[in-house]
Length: 220
Image (tube, rainbow, N blue to C red):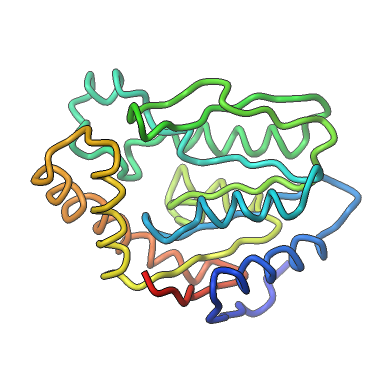
C-alpha cells in the first residue's frame, strides 16, 4: 500500500514534541507500533525521543539504535575505530532483527544502550515490558535504503525525519565530543569533519523516505 504524501513542518522543539505526541496517539491501538526518529548526528533525535516516551507515559518504551554500535573491541580488531559512527560500524542487521522481535514479543525483552562516558555499548541497558504498546526508536540510519538498513523502514508505523542546519550540527557535535574529555580537541575536530558531517550528508539523502519531516527551529 503506498504511503500518504510526506508532511513537512517547521517547528520549535516544544511544538515538535506536541506534534509527535498527537501523532503517536493516533496510531493503531490493537497492536504494538513503532515510531522511528531519523536524522543526522547532533540533530536532537535522542532528546526528542526520550521526551516523547516520557510524555506518552507507561504505554511507551525507548529503543536506541546507538546500542547497536559495534563493540569497541570488535572495531579495534577490524581496524575501524577511526570510522566509528559510520553505517558500517553498526550491527545494522541485528538492530533490524531486534525491532522485528520487539514488534511481536509477548514478554519482557532487554536491549543494549550506548554510553558516551565510556564510548562503548552497555548490554541490558533497558527493558521493554510486555505491556508496552508504543516503541520509540531513534538513530541516524533508520531510513537508509541500502542493506541491511532497508529492513528497518518497513517496520516503522510512523517514520519521522528530524532536520537541523549543518552549521548548527557542527557546533553541537564539537561540544558533545568535548564534554567527557576522552579525546583531544584536534581529534574531536577531525572526527566531526571526517565522520560525523559525512554521516550527516549521507543521512540527509534519506529524508524523502519519512512520513513526516520536522525542520527544528532552534537558537543553538
